Every structure is written in structure tokens, then in C-alpha cells.
Image (tube, rainbow, N blue to C red):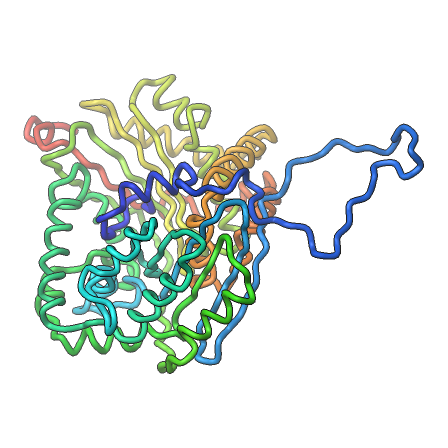
Length: 485
């Protein structure tokens, strides 16, 4: 589900490519930013000068980064992570507000503000934010999901004042007026038409949360209801802005080439004078137990092949059980050697592709198995094989080589992603806003490596029962008219 979030996409294609490959200003290697303490001293391998007899094999270097935490008097959380490997920095301001914070009748507000935040503020004209960043050699964007909204820039090291000024100005006094509101409501409608209504599997992707969750917080889509956006008044959006876009509801993460003392002084200069606002109410994210399988059929005009989506609600995203389910995700669907790919694509030739995905949320997290069937594919046969593999996880401990494959695959993917200072800033901001833990970026690998075969078996038994699954079958429309299964 995480790879199909509804977000603004003015620069999304370029930035997504940058995040995946490390970005144009990548630090070298997965260890960027990890430095020795100032008083650390190198020691010779053998002080006596003779042949060393105590050398040990060098193991893999941990993917860890130096992190400083600060909090301003107005409640703004500040996370600093220095990395001098390239003369650039990335800043990410993460607001603890997403679609989960929207009550019925007011959906789509968080996503709309992702657009409004680029429409000007007290000292920045409409569209000027983009021009200032681009003309100074940088890039920027914003994204929204269920749990948070973030805004970020990547700039040369000498442009820190510019980035702080721009982010502070729109936190302090955004131009939330009728003209900008009407303009961006129209932009969101167009985004929906392009990204959901007229995309293959777009309606299916939107239906995933609806079938899986009972609680409205996670049940409705991030992009929201167009009827809700049309009926909302200007005062509703102004109230939403005052409550959620305040310093005490935000995390400012700075990663890259800067002096931490100077940077903190500048952050206090630009953000320190802002008043805090009343603490926003925490949404109830609890879910009642699911006692029976849920099933839905979708007919898709744009789809070329059938698709099966099988979903489960699992644990919160910062628990040991979550890491066990993450391991299950890797065993079932990461790469051509995964269990489901081998059986569905290689052996039985029932499918052309298999993916698994697990999000980490502060509420029940969604685990998704997605299978792209061959044209005219047999849904019942695919479901049976998926169920057999889930039951095998519940009844038999996984092999040591499978655990090691998941660990190494995860390490490679994270090392590639974490080369980018921007990617690090986003990840640290996310974990701080969602779990209050900026250090999750440093402990993730250790916690995944600690998962045992028994942990995997217990998680599969607890969360992946047959009655706990929610299934969507998507048929190409022409197949549906021809009497497909």
C-alpha cells in the first residue's frame, strides 16, 4: 500500500528517482555521517611492531548515523545529523498530521494543505518558493500519507538560511485565503482524475484501506472526498492550519554539511519566536478484532491483467512483532527466490508478478500480498497457493538461509537509500513524528536481525489467519463481460 500514496507530484518523478538511487548529492557508502568521537584516537594493530596474532575478520559496518536531538521552548523538535561527505544539506519539516486526523465530513484536508503550503506566505509570493529553491541549485517537494505530512528541500551547503526562512515563513503565516483554496481544490480534483480514476488499478488501490479497516481514521483515502473539500468553508481550513501546522506539532530534521552549533542558532532565530498551539487531539487508531474473511470484486476499465490483493492488519510499526512480519514479507515476496514468486510465477505459471508490502504505522499496520495474474488467470488456484504458504509459515520454522536472505536484502536496500541525505532526513522525521524515536534509523537493522524462526511462526499464527484476511479481486472489464471467474 505504501507505494501508492496520493501525493502532490510536481517534482515527484525526479525526486522519487533520486531517493531510489541515492540522489544527485549522495554521500559515499552506507556509513555516511558516522564519525568517531572527537577524542577518539587510532591505535596501531600491533604496538610491539611484530606480526599481529590477534587480528579478527572485519564484519559488516552498521548503518548508523550521528544524531543530535533538541527541543525549542515552543515545542519544535529539532533533529541534527551532520554529514560532511558532500557540500549539501537536506531539510525536512514533518507535521504530525495525516488523513488519520480528519473526522468524517472533513476528509482530504491534510492532502490539500500539501498543495496550499506552496501557494505563498507572509513574505513569500505565490510560486516563489519553487523559484527560490530551484534558482539556488536545489529541489523540493511535499508528501502526505495517513500519519504525517512532510515538506523538504535539498540545497547547497551555503543556502541554509534560505531553507530555514522558507519553512519558517509558511509555518508562521501561510496564505490560507479563498483564492488559494479554490485554486488548489481544482488541482486536487485533477490529481484524482489523473492518479486514481483514470489509472489501472487506481480504484482498487483506493479500496484497499476501505476493506481492511473499520476505524474511520485509516479507512478513508488520503486524497479524501471531493464532496467534503467542496463543502468545507474557508474557516474550516484556517482552523485546521492553526491546530496542526504549529511548532509543537512538527519535527525539523536537518541532515548534511553544516556546523551543528551554527545551525541550531539559526533554527532558533527563524523558528524560536513562534507561539505554540493547543496540543491536537490524538486520534483513536484501535481496530476491533476481525472475525471473518472480507472479499470484494472490482472491474477495471484500464487494467490489462487480473490482480489479487490479500491484506492483513498486523502490529504497530515499532514493535518486535512488526519486524517479524517484515521478515515474513521478505520470505514470501522479495525477489525471484521468494516463496510465492517461485510457486506462482516459476512453477505453476499462474502469475506474472508478486509483491509484498508492510507499512509501519503507529496504529495497526497493513500487510499486503499483491499478485498479478496471467490474463484469464485462476484466482482460486492463486489464493490456494498463497494460503498454503501462509499455513507453512504457521506450522514450520523458516530455514536459516531464508532469514539471512531477508537480512541481507534489507541491508542492501537500506544502504542504497540511506546514501541520500534527503532520504535520511525524511526517514528520521517520519520515525520521530510517528513513534517519537529518531534513533529508529540506527536500530532498524539490529531489530530485524534479531528475528528468530520462532518469532516468524508466532507472528504468522497471530496475524495471518484465514479469517483475518481481506481480499480484492480486480478483473479487466472486458474479462468481466466475458464471464470470467
